[in-house]
Amino acid sequence: MSLMVFDDSKIEQIKKRNEQGSEEKFDVVEASAEAKGGSELVYARVKERVPEDVWNYFQVILSRVRELEDKPKILWFQDTSQDPEVQFLKKKEERDKFERFIFPSDWSLEKYHLDLGVEYEKSVVLKNAIEPIPAHTKPKEGPTRLAYISTPHRGLDVLIAAFRAAKFENVELDVYSSFKIYGWEDKDKDWEPLYNACKETPNVNYHGSVSNEEIRTALQQTHILAYPSVYKETGCISAIEAMSAGCVVVCPNLAVLPETCANFAWMYGYCEDKSDHAKKFAYVLKDAIDNFWEPPVQAGLGFQKQYFDMHYDIDTTAKQWTMMLSTIKDNLESQKQKKHHDKESESRKKTDEDQKDS
Picture 1 (spheres, rainbow, N blue to C red):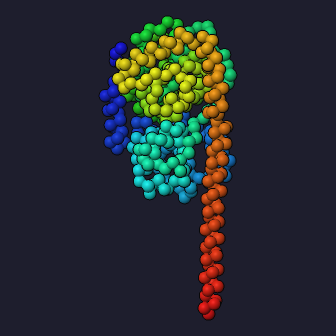
Picture 2: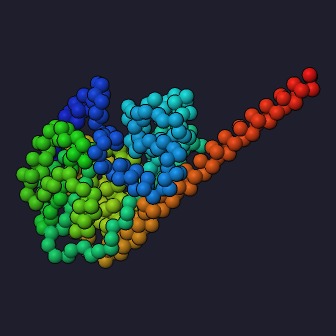
Picture 3: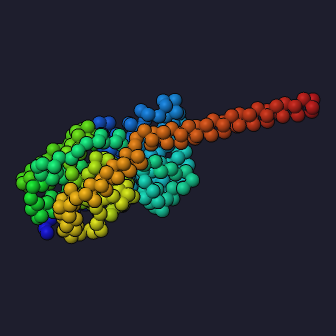
């Protein structure tokens, strides 16, 4: 299987350009004020559910440290430990500026601990969460619908190569992929050849960037999330939403995906060679397409939805955030009061000693 769409040299070229001083990074969470990626959505949904006085007591920073305010600081990671933006944390004096480090997965926490020395005692795993997808019935009539929901550099070229080679019958692929979601329309120019390949491939519908509400609606008509990821995810909101929507998720065992998908995904061994990757992916994808309506698969998808609706519910996660922040706030206030009390006691003691001396 030949990958003629978008090769690694192009991706490396873009990465190298970003590493040479551009303020716009290749894979930034905090891409622009208009960014509406999965991380930004989770941040906004948690913030609106945590009591305002508790949230505003802290500076909660999403991944990218820019200006530090005169508040207790919480650093909420969504990027990998290899990202250039987080290497400053190798210095303990930099880590000491933060009250807590929040991670979306145990995998991510372990990587930051091993690679950057982030302390376990200051780290908390609070998983990314969603508003559960409403219960619905998948369409039995018509084609089996596949979806790719991510930026293009995370595996879209592998997917298109596999889809072209497999020549599936009665299958359609919806591609929701663009950097516009991060406010990076200019970056899409580099990926036009891949977008054009989507548009030129029979039974592939290229939608570009759409709102999260449109994605959630589309997932109710989707049977399979086709995600041959080549990117080291730290949480993967798209997989969480797809599983809540009762979709089969086909993906490799790369980075956090085994943890996030919790043994429900149709998973295969990741390999770096993209041609081999596409072959493996196509094999498992065909199996998922052929067996989607089998009773054991449907029973498993029902259990899958229950699991993801319970474990990745945004209201539950927001309560965990509230409890954590409230506890830290109370402890910090107690420490302040103790310091104030100790200072007053010391002052009184000194006054008494001065009076005795006189």
